[in-house]
Length: 463
Image 1 (cartoon, one colour):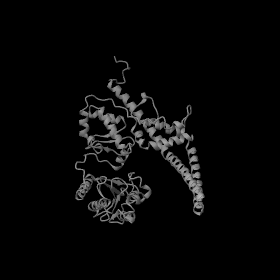
Image 2 (cartoon, helix red, strand yellow):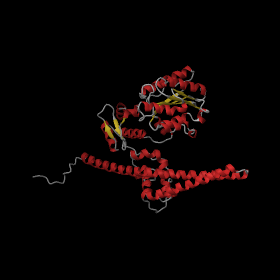
Image 3 (cartoon, one colour):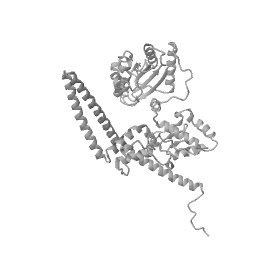
Image 4 (cartoon, helix red, strand yellow):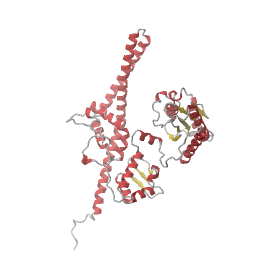
């Protein structure tokens, strides 16, 4: 039973390739593959492929694939945009051998892309299920045309994979569920129970459908939440707050086409009151409990981060104030761990201003440099040492120093993250308040209109 997937790579080619061949990445099999150098580094990592016995190149040498792919892009002056495609083919556990899996992967890549594209094929052995990775150059070495990934090309990939599996007496999925295909990043986020912005749109649409009796009400509910609508086009589209592009509803799945939405609304017997979004499981008050003190006032960066967590529904709030959290803030739930760690750091060290933060960061970087110097000295002493007892002591000292350096590096990352994120958080809070104010005004006008008030009821009647 072989499953397949393919997604685009839009970041720098070199970083994807480094990622694909870096042995240090062998425990992160499904991180976001958003650049080509990482993908190639990952797919041929020694720990996954038994010293690269199962890494092959089609129209390229795996060891120089990056240079060859880059040369092709430069030749046809197409170095921007999508730089590669990353394909995936997984087999059922215990169903095949590495040799057969790799042979199937090579045949698949050769049939689909071998005439026009450079491809690296790698078979990974680090999971219970054997699986192939394909790194496909987005630009053809033959004619310079880009590879076009769509439903038809993916269907061909799946059909070819199924045929090759049958030829090797392997099982296939006879009746795959329709309308269930997801982008790899979305699938990955769902596996880690992290929200995706497309998933948030689905949640809002589901809630709007449940609360509507007509399509007009459905549109009005979404607009009150800050969505922009395109209803006078062939395919319904929405743009959530903070996004630049519209999303066609049909791309969200079979349940979100215009016909399906109308059918779901018609099934409503009575309109339901739109429920508040379920708040995350209560880690809320305890997130920064150890760093908060009763009666303490917060300002600057501390206040900004605490307020943001409150608006996201992470910190405790009264039941009476439970409302549907803004799309802008719900989207950041995927970064919840980073934001809470940054909040802890700010509160723990009572950092309120950017100057205080940069000063603290400078101190950390100085400690790091000193720590690296000290560890290097210990390594030099260890290499020269001849006494077993002293060798063990040096090893213990190096291990402890390495732990301290790891903590310092983490805090450096948190500080740089705060510097990069704080302006964005402030802007989102401001936009959220503006959107709420606009919606409140719209609700007031709507209530007046429903009540038949013209705004002139206090004027004297004419005689």
